[in-house]
Length: 346
Image (cartoon, rainbow, N blue to C red; front, top):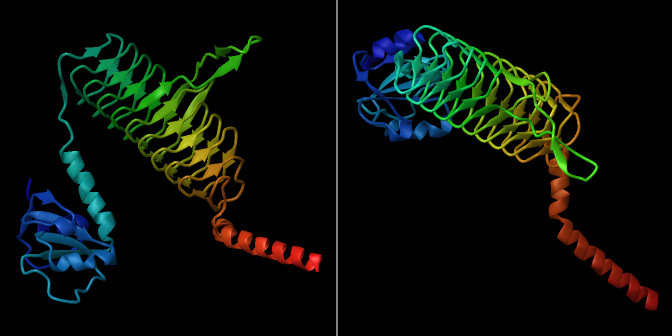
């Protein structure tokens, strides 16, 4: 679909500088701009690209003033927040490209399942007994929806995702390819012979509204009760969420984060990639955990933590400075030890 600068400005409550009738039908990064494409500029370090971009329209902040001539083919749409407005357009673009309602064959829907209106069900998808699928849900090919699963309105389940029995997914959620929700928690107990016996995992997983789960992430069902992913949580690819974990509202974590069983993560927490969090602890609301950090005990007050074990980032930087100087310090100690021995001989 084509949109004019005038239409885009209307959607974003923006101001046009240039040709209001120029149209775009594609999106592009500003450094890769081409005719007929829409780009945006919000970070000043990318400003140099706006003077050579081939894009037809660029969304910029109202505070932006060019320091040299812009391409004559470029029209600006000035808005209060260029990044947020471009994200809004991306969301609209995604909605327009959403699958149209259809049930492809072959696919399987159990007779006892309840299916909402206007759903898309891809080929080879499976919906189990007594599952409840909301309105406007998109379920791509080869997805598995188990018995008694509930999926809320407008949620999207991508190819190859599996939602095990009794789990619940809220409204407006996005479950990416290869995600496993509700696999057994890692529960084993050694017997008198030292052999591990499986502890039955009879709970479930509950995702509240507006949750997004990245590709190949796994969220284990609770031993008893529920593993909770609260409203607005964003989880990147390849994360592991163990049984009975609770992740608070609007918390975000990057790829390869691992959270051990029964950990309670607060609201608005940010966790960097490859961080590890031990089980049965609590992380305070608003905490930030730097990538590759390890958290072995509860965090009672919001802070930015780094290292393994994680400590406040300023303390870590001071410690790391000392660590880097260890070879120099060791050489000095050896020199002093040598002088002391020489003095002792004298």
